[in-house]
Length: 85
Image (tube, rainbow, N blue to C red; front, side, top):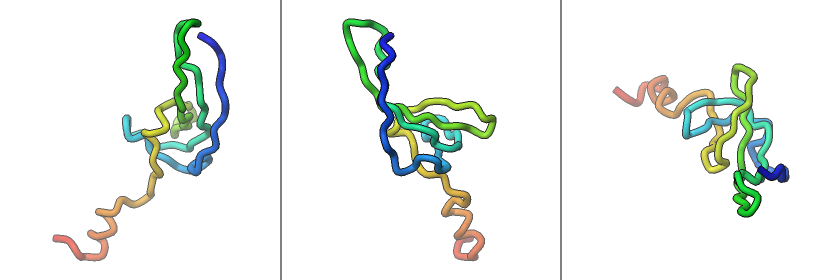
């Protein structure tokens, strides 16, 4: 594998995010455009998000899977206001 990569700016860096593929939340530490191919003859580049979970370990996911994480889901707010049954 060829060790080529570049850092990519992202609006959610250093913010709490959720990986929609796994449901895990953490802090977005970096977004990197990385060559993920396993052969020298063919390059496959992909933007990977590096998220640090509550355990302190970082994991990667596709940038398209990253969304902001909110403390209170919208449904909880409606229940508290008494607008739903």
